[in-house]
Image (cartoon, rainbow, N blue to C red; front, side, top):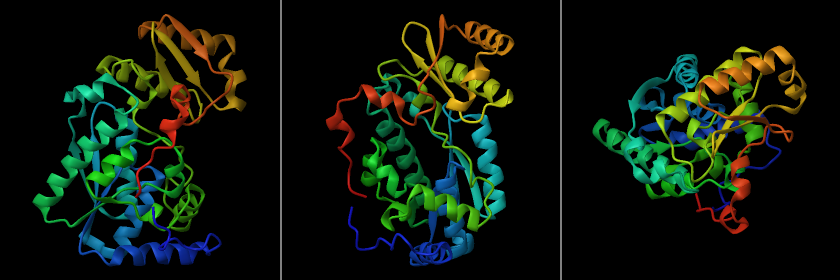
Length: 289
């Protein structure tokens, strides 16, 4: 991506906020692909400040979106004051998505952005926005190609705003998700090559919801072949997962959901851990934004 629009790394947070708002004032109308996470929340907050009712937040609803994330998106949109709509997307009807190859995210985002573009055109909305930040460009994210194909703008990445700065902006605007952990879709928990099914998505959501209810903060229930469940927890929370009563309850729940083996990853929570099996070359193939 070009760097001409990127801001100085040491810009005060108030000035950074003003620059992001100014960046969006040039549009007549925008709609933000809005998960309710901190990145899309910051873009939505800036868009609302820049354009008022000419900015909207659009949340994709499907079986890979946890109910807790849907509720959070509604609450965050209300806190921002932005107009908010929810719309069902049909990625589960796409065999390339269900097949769950390393490019699954591309097929998911292609479905999402094509649906959003059609909806936005019907509403007369000019520009699609995403919450992609600069740090996202360093990870393996095939969905970025879909964003490019559907002309989705990423103001955070374009201005060189990092994840840490996104959280600072969220705190600056007192958004309720300033410290919320990342929450990608449930399909991202299924190992590549293992098909995406409604049953697997439901099992992942059930187990992660249960773990959150026990007080675990940031968890991933990752599904591998042959009925293997690999749990990732923050390293400081690993010992508590092995307490006899909690461990037995967890194994029982996983067994009820059809898993034959329940494992605890000693490396702890790691974003994108399923990408470790991919060739190094594929991780560097990112489109320009």
